[in-house]
Image (tube, rainbow, N blue to C red; front, side, top):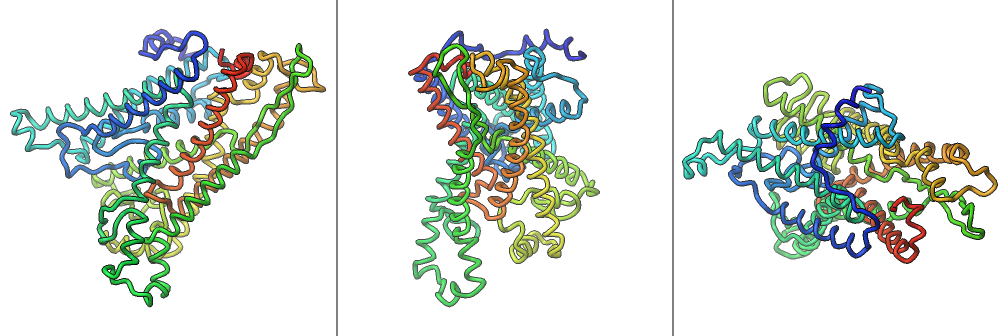
Length: 494
């Protein structure tokens, strides 16, 4: 294997040491909370020397990139997700031939992914800095007596440090905490957006408060000059649904309830202990078996495509499409742009947005095609990345069968062998993964079309609810293992 020669280099990469033996639940909880506090602290440390006129290229993707504009966490989990996409696509297309069921090759895969994260931090930071989107503060440079080039280098160093920090923070949570750092940071970022979207009293460009509750109070007050006749008109109803936040509120509640319901939908395969009579259990194969994390990969792929198109457009190369204020307005990039809210597909709202950008409004068929392309990317991308995800994370039929075999469990009525277990798991896991990947793609599309509170986006809200539900289940299993230490061998924790 060609990558075997890289093993010595990959082994020398800095890594968080794995715990030796069992880590107590309270200690895991302590590490998780500590990393969460550190994340919020770093997200509120502004980049030194950044000009206020800088443009955030990933503003629309903040919900699932878990970053903060203009701070050390400006890249968020973007480099981690992008590295995962690149490697999964290369392995899936057999460009890189790896057997991810082999622990040694899986370790090499994880090492390659970490190495690629370092590269992606630079790849995602440099185009934004050198392309003039993240600008150094020339006035501050003059005050300090340094060149603008030095300030540019200083910005890159800060962003690189932030990208590396979030990588190792994720590793600390994965090895010493509960759940994953990526999921934890997404929950933190989206929850903050939702709370802001409910209570923020600041005014937006239209003169209305940003928060849902202050907005309703303002609309109901006489000072808003919004009469009952206007509210009862078609235009007024659309205003209340979209700008008034009613559609976003309904969408948020529906998605929350749907995800909780779907997460509890599962096929349970009965298990019995081979040596202990009466010891029985069940292996749950959830409808969303691969979780909703593959949706991050789909949206991150779209984000990187948009970044490429924006850079080309800024250089005068408009063969893929033109951009106005970081928004694609025509060409292939318009169709590949993700749907984020009703403003992206309701014709009257799309028309007003394009008019404000000084561009002719697109015809209805183009808007419809845009929605269809996004739907196809979410559904088919969800299936593909879900299948890749279960193989790279040890959730495939073969890996699960080996874990059950090592735990001493077996399926009643079947021979106790890894091959038999694998054949049974093969009947369920791949099929449920495909159905779950497609279903979560449809759910993400619906949430994106309707919009959500705080502008978190359908993907961000979907991820947050699902990750929180899984985190709750993970905490419950951790507590169960504290009470019943014998369960650790089944979960592979010891």
